[in-house]
Length: 394
Ligand SMILES: Cc1cc2nc3c(=O)[nH]c(=O)nc-3n(C[C@H](O)[C@H](O)[C@H](O)COP(=O)(O)OP(=O)(O)OC[C@H]3O[C@@H](n4cnc5c(N)ncnc54)[C@H](O)[C@@H]3O)c2cc1C
Image (cartoon, rainbow, N blue to C red; front, side, top):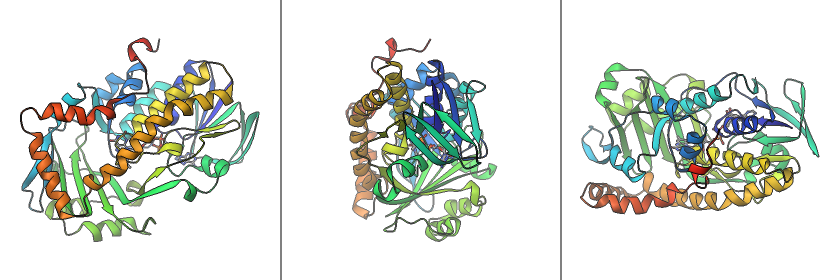
């Protein structure tokens, strides 16, 4: 059996690993010219942590883990406005949480499949013949044939567009834009230390935190009534965040060139069906929960694992696709709802919400708060991997 996977990101590489392990031939088609470095910080827990553990990735991911001591909100002058110790969050997850740059996770996945699957960088999918099996014409003019095609190509999926139609039908815009980039600055690094610093005013929030390789990652989220991404995102960032104090201004001054700045609308993907014929979608392509839910990578890995699991059952491609969707959908729906609610508190647009958030963070430092936090985070820890101890990879 042969699988063609479009997108060598988190979902695509995870699926490639599991299918290869089950004896499939796998071809990955990736639009970028090579592995994507950097990105933004990802917290991996729940399904993602369980799947990474089964794949034997935890040692590499622990090495990449960024040691942040505290998430601190500061004002324009870097005076503390409250925060929470990372150890407190980790204890809520019983230590089963790791934080690293998206590029580190993709590199660990890539190392796990290297030499075992064929990755075709710098090309994409132009046309799909979808029946019993698929014939895929690539943008470089070549043709691939396989038993199935998987769209693991993210929120703006090309496979989804080709098979299910224009993205406007499926993207639910949450009212925010986000951006991220990585810089090197030793002085600034000393100022930030081991904190994840957040500077915010209603409707805008900038973050700065250390990476495990000694650099700094900057992230931005702001409310925007317009879903359209600005023509010049770098200029938009300077305009929107230039008045958030010296720390942010300095970070903006060091913004890298265009290609190294991630900028996108914050959206979820909602679809009635995730497959058609021999084509199926996985990860953000069909069920993006958005950064507001903070679990997209975990669900991308979880979904890839479940899809491979159902294909292994051998009931045929169509049945496997349906069973995968049935297992994943309830997890996705809960997290999408949570993401929509959380947005108002992660990037409050009103002063009263910012004040309430400060009070909640202060309360989280009180003795006994861990039990409350544990209850609040419980649904986030649910995993699509049932009884991980019994489902270990060989
Ligand atoms: C700022 C930010 C913070 C986040 N924080 C977290 C977090 O803390 N925890 C968490 O779990 N999730 C987080 N997420 C979400 C997480 O990054 C995504 O949910 C996850 O990356 C989805 O993985 P994916 O493989 O489905 O898609 P992607 O990671 O988007 O990968 C898609 C791949 O397909 C490739 N591709 C795209 N189009 C084409 C094409 N036409 N042809 C070929 N290849 C193509 C891309 O280059 C890429 O390699 C965050 C997201 C953002 C933006």
